[in-house]
Image (cartoon, rainbow, N blue to C red; front, side, top):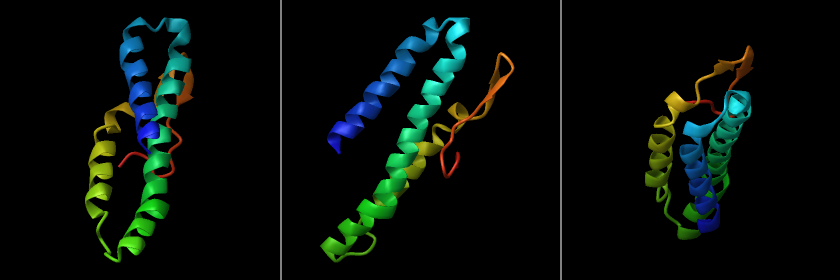
Amino acid sequence: MAVFHNLLLRSLNTIYLQAPYVKDADKKAFVGYSYCWYDAIDAHHTGEEKEFFPWIEEAAGEKGIMDANVEQHSQYQISFVPLVVPVDIEGVHCEAKSRAGPP
């Protein structure tokens, strides 16, 4: 799991560092890359909450032991709402494809 979290952090770092230098011709692709990053986080959190966390609770014999982690996911994703609103670039509509959508 640490490797995947590192991948997400490094990917976010590429977005942050490259955003000021994106040329007009590359904006659509850059927004698509950024939305893919958000979708990866959404898929990761969804997978943890639906599969991994229940397994941990069952193995530990303590229901609700992962509730704090679910709350962290919620707060973390809420912070990205301004970043995942649909945008139009050069007449092309772009939006994230997350299953849950922005909270």
